[in-house]
Amino acid sequence: QQQVKQSPQSLIVQKGGISIINCAYENTAFDYFPWYQQFPGKGPALLIAIRPDVSEKKEGRFTISFNKSAKQFSLHIMDSQPGDSATYFCAASAGTGTYKYIFGTGTRLKVLA
Amino acid sequence: ETGVTQSPTHLIKTRGQQVTLRCSSQSGHNTVSWYQQALGQGPQFIFQYYREEENGRGNFPPRFSGLQFPNYSSELNVNALELDDSALYLCASSSKRQGIDGYTFGSGTRLTVV
Image (cartoon, rainbow over all chains, first blue to last red; front, side, top):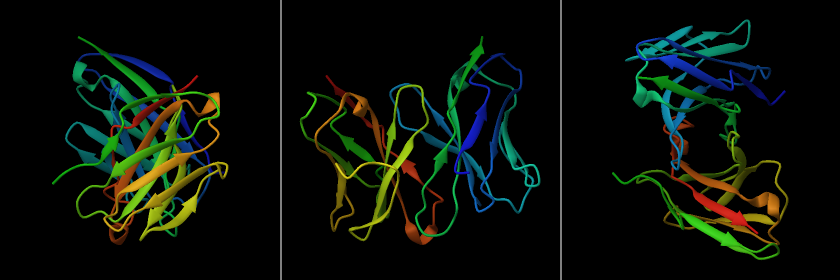
């Protein structure tokens, strides 16, 4: 019940295309869902995050769609660029007590020039 | 505003040895969490420190221990190293007053156990 399932494992997109990464969870106590971007040799960096009281959040080219009833959320990267090539992790957290993240297994995105 | 800094960046140890990893939290952050990231996997929560006390622990054995100092910096200690301990160890700081928003990760320490 603590797992966050992420798909696909890898993704190849043409420059200018839309990249879509999906995550699903079971624990209904989760109330914070961040996405992290990680480049090789670096730590994860917060990209965008959402709470369950909204169904969508957009920041620039990055959009999170959230479906509370289905317990699913996804990251959409519009107009994907070669510089977006990185590994993306979804995560979830329950906002009480210990603020720990449960991470998905990651999606390796490659954007072709 | 400084970010999260970790040292050393890389480390090679022999099975059975002990290791100490260090983390300086971001200015204004009073909570430090440690994560283990195996190759090709997502980070796994080890434990969290707030006000120098352990504030939650993941599914890691007692040979993983930590400290937080009055300046909010932190150490992760691993005793009796095993080959499976080879991973990227990430430190993340946050302000507990803000909850988990603003969780900032360092670049990690790459530990190799041979």
